[in-house]
Every structure is written in C-alpha cells, then in structure tokens.
Amino acid sequence: MNFNKVYALGLRHMYLISNSLPRIIDLIYWPTVQIFLWGFISKFFTLNSEYYSNTVGIILTAAILYDFLFRVSISFNMMFLEEIWSRNFTNLFIAPIKISEIVASLTFTAILRALIGMIPAAIIAIPLFGVSVFKLGMPLLFLLLALYLFGITLGLLVTSGLLRFGPSFENIAWASLFFLAPLGCIYYPIEILPNSLQIIAKGLPLVHIFEEMRSILISGNVNYFDIIKSISISIVYFILGVIIFYVSFLGAKVRGTLINMGE
Image 1 (cartoon, helix red, strand yellow):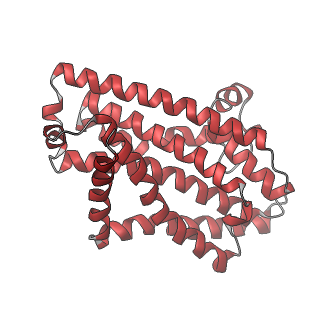
Image 2 (cartoon, rainbow, N blue to C red):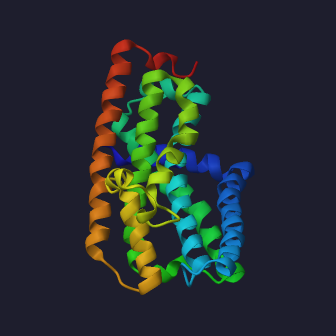
C-alpha cells in the first residue's frame, strides 16, 4: 500500500469540505440539532423520572457518542457516493490506485469528518446543559475507537451493496444505522429488550459500549473487560466487513459493472 496515494485521496476529500461552506454547515448542523433536541427532552425526563439521577448527562452523552458513530458511517458512505455522483469512480481505476488504498483513504478521512461535527456539538453541550462527554475520561478514547471501527464496518457493508446492486442501493446508506439502533440500547438499558432480542443485541458492540458509558456516569466504575470486549467485537465485524467488500468488488469486476457505477 502506498501511503502517499492514501494521503492524496484523503486530501482530495478534505479540500472538497474546506472549500465548501454548505458541506461544513451540514457536518456541524445535525449534531448540534441533536444536542438541542435531546438536551431539552432529557431535561423534561429529569422533571418526570426517577430512574436516572443525571438524566440530562446520560442521554446527552449517549446522543453525542451515537452521533459520532452515525457520522463515521455516513461519512464513509458519502465520500464513496460522491465518487459515483461525480462520475469519478471509474477514473480512480485508470490511475495506478489499489482498492485497498481507496478504502484506507475513506477510512481515515471519515473520522476527520465525524470529528468536525462532534467536537462543536460536544462543546456546545457544556455551557447549555452542563454536560461534558469528556467526563468519561480515558475510557472515552476506547469507546470512540470501538464506535469508529463499527461505523467503518457499516460503511463497508453499504458500499459493498453499492458495488453489488449499483446506485439504486444508495438509499440504504441513509437507513443502515437505524436498522441496528433499537438493538444497540443507546438510550435505555438492555433489560428493556425482550429476552430473545437481548441475545442478539449482546452480539453487537453497541450494547457493551453504551452499557459501559452508563455505568461510568452512574457509578463511576470502569469495567475494562467490557471495553475490551466491545473493541474485540468491533474488530471481528470490521474484518468481516472488509471480506464482504472485497467479495463484492471482485464480483462487480468479473461482471463488468464497475464501468457503469457512475451511470
């Protein structure tokens, strides 16, 4: 893998962002709206619920982490889709660029796009609602790593669908994460789910990530075993996502449908 090519591909997408005010606003707007929405909803819960002593902090922290996951996944998808929309996808393969270099550039650039949206939202939550996601301390980095790996995995699975079924599959890009959100136990503990769904949910890293987040905020206890478990599960899904992506790419290459990706 040539890291100069990876850097160049990533730099191209960063130039698109830095030179486009609408793109920057889009990256910052939705996470900020999420903070306002969940901030006021959780304030209402505080006045009408005794489940959490720190309802605002727990729900807003969950919203910030979930939005980070969403932004990583959707950023990966968006950059891939932009290559299709601009009819540049075929041109990438005329140049001496490997598919692994394209994936690597999208993977590294996705986190930059996600942080552009997450950091302002996290900062705004501090003066408005007195909530700081940074109170999670060092475990925050590990939780973000698990979310990042899983977000990239979802991006790989969606782009695999795009390679297999073409641009008609792009609507799935917008809905992919919402399919898993009910099982992710983002805003509620896993005990809320029926027993049959709990078994399925425990196979996702999201449950372990958000359960650990709530545990840290409620009791102050850090269970590094659960954190390592969430990262390990995310790595397994990431490897599976890479395999599926390459299978889809080779299949599209054999069928000769890559040339029509921009159509």
